[in-house]
Length: 495
Ligand code: ADP
Image (cartoon, rainbow, N blue to C red; front, side, top):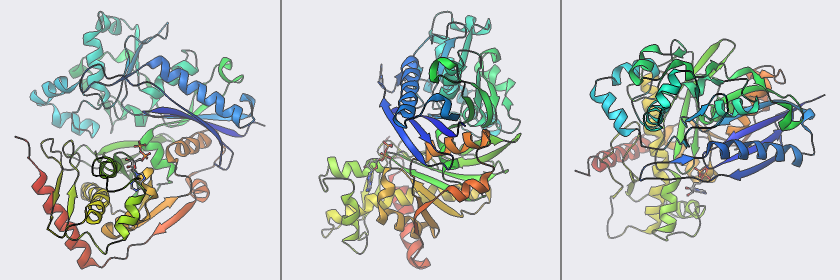
C-alpha cells in the first residue's frame, strides 16, 4: 500500500524534493538551484521551464534516493515562493515571458499610478494588503502591457496566469488542471480575502481578464492527479500552500496567537489568527490556508534585514569568521553596553514602512567594543520581531501565545533566549527546522487521509528546545524603549 508523502518545496533559490513517511519523518531529499536573471536594476526573473524541470527532477530523485517507486507514494504536497508570476499559452503550455519573481520591482510605476488614483484603501479593505509591486497584480499587468498581443490573447481566453503552485499543477496534470490554493491567490492583490473569490472590481482596475485566472481551491483536498509519465503512477495532489503558510502549518501553529518566525537573510514572522481576519492598515493580513470549506487567517510581513546583518558583521567588519561566532561574542559580555544597531540597509519595512531610513549604529562611546556591536546586531533581529508582533497583537486584539522559530539564525541560542526575554513569551525551536516542506507534508497527508486532524499533527511535531523568558519587566521595557528611540532616529535619513 502506498504510504509515503512526496513534497515539492519550490523556493526562491532552488527546489527541494522530499519524501516523508506516514509519521511525517523525513526519509530522503534532493535539492537543486536554478538560474536567476536580473535584466535591469530592480528586475528579477527566472525561467518557468527551469522551475518546472528542476522541481520535477528533485522530486523524482528524492523518490529514488528513498529507494522507493512512484507507486509507493500516497500523495503529493506542493509549497512555493509566493507572488511569483508566470503567464503561459493554455494549449501549448509555453510561458509567454520569463517568470517574474516576487522581489522584482518593475511594477512600481503601475502601483504608484494605482495609489495616485486613490485605490489603496479599496485594495486594503478587499485583500488585506497595501498596494505594492511584490504582489502578482502589477507583474501580470506588466506582462500584458509589454508582450506584444498579450492583452488581446488573454481576453480571447488563450492565456493562463498562475503562481508557481498553479504552474506546477498545470504541468503535473499535463494541462488538465488550472488551479491554485487560497494562500497563493491571497498574494495576488486580485483576490477578495473575505469573500474568497477573484474580485471583479480589482480585476477591472488592473484590467486583468478573469478567464486567465486559476480556480481557487482549499489548501487541503484533491487538486488533480499527476500524469503517469512523471512518476509511473497517478499521484493525487492533496495539499498546496505558499511557503510562509506552509511554514506556519509545519510549525503546528493551530491556536490563535501561535506564531512562527523564520530567521533567514530576512525574517518572516507570521501569527495565526484563526477565523479572525483583522483589519490592518499596514497590509499584514493574509489567508493562512483553506480547509473543510473554510479559511483560516494569519498576519505577517517581512523584516527586510535579519541574518544579513550578521553577514555584514562578518564580511564587512570582519569581527567574526563565521555567523555562528556571533553567539559566543554576544555571550562574552553582560549586555550591549548601550549600543543599538538599526539595520535599515534598504529602508524599513513593516510596520515602519520608511524607504528613506538607513542603517544606524547609536550609543557608541570610546569604550564600545566589537563584541557590543556584534551583540547589538544579533539583538536587532529580536527587536524587529517584537516591533512586528506587537503591531499584529494591536491589529488583531489577539495576544501572542508562543513563538516557534526556524531558519539559519535560529541555531543561535543567545538570539532565541534574548527573543524570549524581549517578547516575554516562550520561544520554541523544532527538531525538524525544514518547516516549509514539513507543512506541505502535513497538508498533503491531511488531504489524503493519512493524518486525521490538526490534533494528530500537534502530536507528531517535536520540539528541540524551549526558551523561557527570564528578564524582569523593568529591564525588558527599558531596553525595548531604547530600541524604539533608535528606530525613530534612523527614519527619514535620505532626502
Ligand atoms: P536564507 O534561506 O534566507 O538564505 P538561511 O535560513 O540559510 O537564509 O539563514 C542564513 C542567514 O542566517 C545568514 O544571513 C547568516 O548570516 C545568518 N546566520 C546563520 N547562522 C547564524 C548564527 N548562528 N547566528 C546568527 N546568524 C546566523
